[in-house]
Image (cartoon, rainbow, N blue to C red; front, top):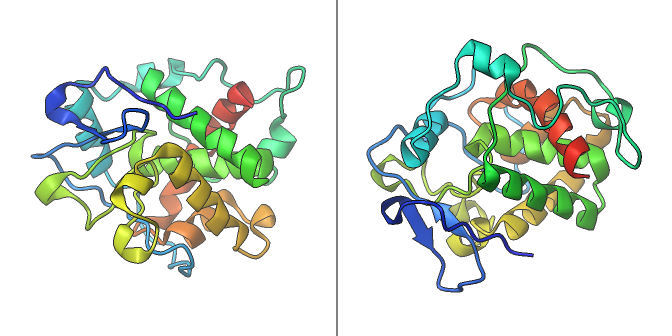
Amino acid sequence: MKYRFTRWLPAIAKDSKDPNRKIALSVVGVAALGGLAFGPTAVAAPVTTTPHSGAVAAIEQATGQRAPDAADESAQTTGGTTTEPTAGKPGREELIPHGVQGAQSRVPLDDAQRANAKAIVEEAKETGVGERGAVIGVATSLQESKLYNLGHLGAYNDHDSQGLFQQRPSSGWGSPDQITDPEYASEAFFTALKNVGGWQNLPLTSAAQTVQVSAYPFAYAQWEEQAADIVSELW
């Protein structure tokens, strides 16, 4: 199933020629995305600094949203603040087998973000990476785009990075139309993840960074708990 979002203002939406394909957010006049995804066979970079704020600024301007206050963040969930299993749902042992690393962040999710998260989860099932792979994928997208299918940000774009995972056509991830298709982008991410030796036994941020080769490699860790909650809800 392809997700098509029609709620965005025309000035910030980039509609595909195919009416059954995605709409990707496109923003100009905002800060650039600081993280970027290199090629699907790239090697991990050293762990360095803190998460970029450019994606947050871009998304807030595109959607008219404000950043949540600390009190808001503590109250925001994806349907629950824990990953306790319910019937037919994966539990914390499957979702966070190594425990979380560092302080955790949360953002409220709208319908577009939930639909994108669902696309990631469904591709995790299709590609065979399972619940743990889904958590890595959702956490990566939370860091890279806050689960928004971002189009090109004009002069402020981070190189040619686009989509849920900020993948780059110039690095072999696919064409702009492909990497802004949530299903294609998710499949490409999980295919690359499966090529990471022993990814199931790596901390989330190490597995994600080996695929993405971001300038902010440790930033993925902060989304592990919310990603686990999302996967638990959508699985």
